[in-house]
Each structure stands twice: as structure tokens, then as C-alpha cells.
Length: 331
Image (cartoon, rainbow, N blue to C red; front, side):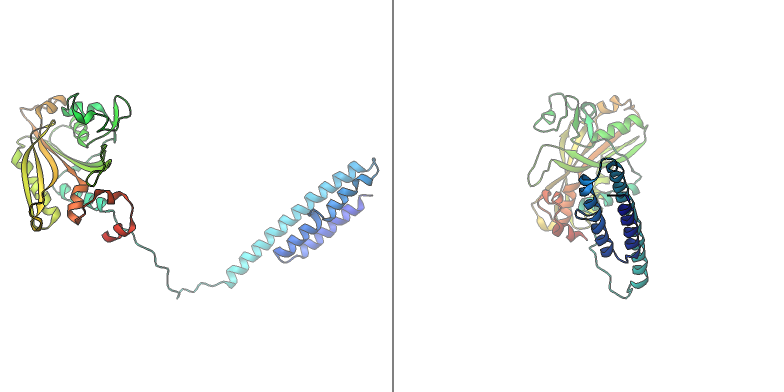
């Protein structure tokens, strides 16, 4: 067997490839020359009958022929694909009169909408928004807030601990400590964020949202605190509500209070809404604020609670189920 038949096969393959006008014809040529039963594989099978002096040269020629034909096939394939694209651009037209496809328009989550409304109100009163870490240490979450070492909120059945020092914050009150350390009075800030507690039922979830507010200034008193919160709640609900301001206890405020709310048409159904109070003098001493010159008050509002009351929702868990039928109601 000589080298000439292999060279002739390459010439024949090149001629066939150049004359092919579509991808199907090109694939048929590939099978004809390079397929399992193609011409070149037949030559490989015949190598056993070839004399030893020409076998190496013939084997090398066959391999080279395979590479040459494969290269020609790829080049022709690219040319045909380019032609197909150009023809498509010329022949295909876009009918601009066809009606467009309608798509669903999303909306803000009700929690997001509540936060947005709260920001607008408190920004008009000169509060600036700050943020704090969700992974907190025990100093900012407990110690700096005058919460004793034996307070039940430190227990593992109440709080998500990473180790002896780090935890998922149980409230946004740690933000007020950072603010008082990094700022000098007058201070007027609010902070929104996720907080975490080990609780799950119709009115509690392991993660929920809270807003923290803080003012530290001269001549700050309890009446001022009550006025701001009443103004906010009447502005937020825009409906007939009854508020109840009652004494309470928090380690980081003294005196402390809670505000309950009830819609007039639902007489008898009080809902605990927020906690507040004057910043405890011990906390001001911890952050080197002169209690002879300055005082302050703080308040924490459960955002889910506000939203539930606003939209008459009786189960907090629906906020986190991503149920489109529920969320579509707020468009």
C-alpha cells in the first residue's frame, strides 16, 4: 500500500467539504471520511497487510490526513454558521404590532413598607439612621445595658449563643451603646434590624425585626418621650386607636413603661406594642456621659407587631412563608 491513496482521500475530502451547502451535508462528509466505518479507518485496518518498511510512514500520513480533514470540516462549519446567521437577520422580521407579554409586578414586603414609613416619620424629627452588627458580644448585648449575669435572657433556652462571648443579638439596644460611645450629645438616632430569640408560636418567631430609638440631650424628660411615641402611633395607624401607657421594668431604663394599643372597634383587645423609658444613669456613666448635664430616653418597637395590627394579621409566621397569595394583597 502506497501513500498516494491517502493523499487522494484528503484532496477528495476537501473538494466535498467545499461543495457542501448545509450542516447535514457536512455531517455526512465527516462520517464518510472520519467515521468508524469511514475511508481513513479502513486504511488503518489495512496497515497489518503493509510491509514493515512503509508502515510507519503510512500510519503517520493517515493521522495527518485525519487532522487535515477535521480542520477543513471545522472551517467549513464556521462559514456555514455565519451564513445562516446572516440569512436569519435578513429574512426574519420583528412584528412590533404584536402585544407584549405581561409580567407580574412585585411589591414591597409589608415589613419593608412598615420600616419605610417609620423612617419617614422619624427622619422628619431629625433622627439619623445607624446600624449595628447582628452577631454581637455579651458586653454590648447585656453588660453595657445593665443586664445582670444571672438574668434569664442570657440562658441558652432564650438566646442563640456561638460561644461564651458571641451571640445573635436579642435586641437592637446594643446599637444605642455604640452610638453613645462614638458620638457626643446631643444624640438622636434610630436603628432598624433583625434580632433573634428562641421562641416560635403565633406571636413569636426566632427572627424578627425591631426598631431602636434614642435621644440624649439636655432637658430630655419622660413627657417628651411620651409625646413623640404618641405622635408616631397616631400618625402610623391613621385611624381611631386607643393607647395605654403603663409602668414596666427594663434593666436599661429607669423609669420604664410599655405602650399597649387597641382599635376602638375592638374594645377589650389590648396589644403590647413597644417598650420605652429614660436611659438608666448607670448606662450613661459606662459611656462617660455626664448625667448632671444630659439625660436620655430610648424605645424599642417590634416591627412585626405594628404591621400585624395595621393589616389585621393574627399570625406573625405568615410574614416569612413567602406565600405569593398573601404577598399579592399588598400591591
